[in-house]
Image 1 (cartoon, rainbow, N blue to C red):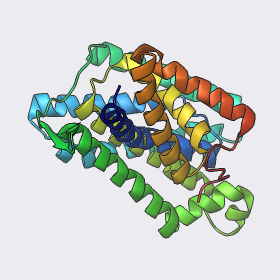
Image 2: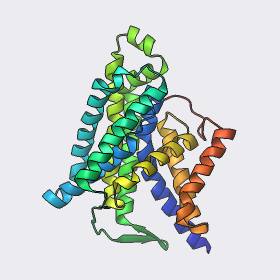
Image 3: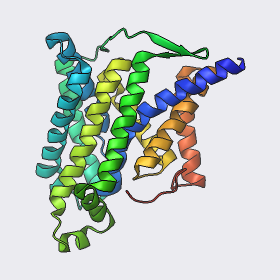
Length: 289
């Protein structure tokens, strides 16, 4: 492969990495703040993609118009799930909450498989492609990258500048002290889980415009979220962004040199390596901003 081929692979990896950052940032938020390994995350992404697909094909609703509605719907679903179900065991050992979300994931997975079937579905927009200096970029992937970066950036602003964001940080640092300061901890837990579901659903909308979505991918997306959190560092927007870009670039080059069927394996090997030599991830940031 020549230099131009390597540059094309690098650009492909960066575009993919931006999507991965959006995929993982909600998972990282829930894990970092609630100490919950949300096994439901992959299914929430696919649910967002399915809603987008059927809104487009059944009612002609453009994915860009569906995005805010899907995001709000997923936020409400996550908020209610955390408030009514998960909050009841949120202070139990992590194995309990992980098992609970695993059970919820099985319910949602089976519902989607029965109702939508596992047939891969995609919103085909036929936007064409552009070429910059000999580097070809499909417009749908370029649009997906921009949307993913905007969503990730908005979450960063919310966490840094809003009262809700500061309350989430306070609860994450010391929930007992936050309660003494008048913060309703259970409500913040519900908001945090809702934001995680919102990011998952919005990412599903983006993915439906770029790749086929199917329930067979729920485990793969959950696994990628794990890898990205370990690579970039758990509990920060920067960590999810760095981890997503690194995984995207590595998978892109691994697909070229060892075959796309081994790209995911290479990512997991990197995760295991970092767990041994640098458990805090590449950014080395502990805790949410």
